Length: 236
Image (tube, rainbow, N blue to C red; front, top):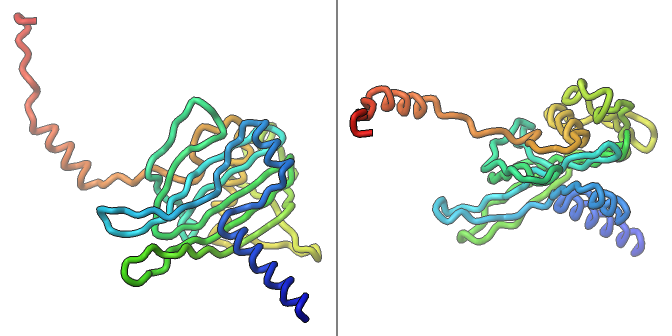
């Protein structure tokens, strides 16, 4: 009985670690990712906004692919819709950091591809309200964990036209289809495209901040009302 309880406790701890830190990759996989120049950072952190006097969660969209393998991590909201980036990150290198997001809560989507085999982890992260403005404890939970999913297409090559429209099929241990939550199917398809995007330089899930139409109209009206600066040609 004691051994059973210990085993269950260990399994719970492993799931909590998986939910918090993301996919636990073996050393040989990490070595191949480093050798291929693929940098994927699934870790998240709690940050304090001093002006707003609140805590938020910070995440980094990162990753990319080469022909043989790919890894990518990004974020959507709790309904599976795209989030706006805080900032987009441009760099000389490829398959690295692409954007940064901060939000009170979000869902992390992380995928690893080795040839035509895929692992997918979807986790929810939020900050419960804490008393006396103390630093809150990050709550993380697993929404979907699929291992060794299959997709018999070369999205990094001859089947690149299907990127963003397909995603792997996952099975339970008994051979039954392990369905993705409906609200995250679009995010999973975009993530599948990301782990096949060789030499990736752009965001696949985070999007630009929406433009405030009223503010844009005000700026345009001001520009139209301001007369152009007079230039004295004879003085040039």
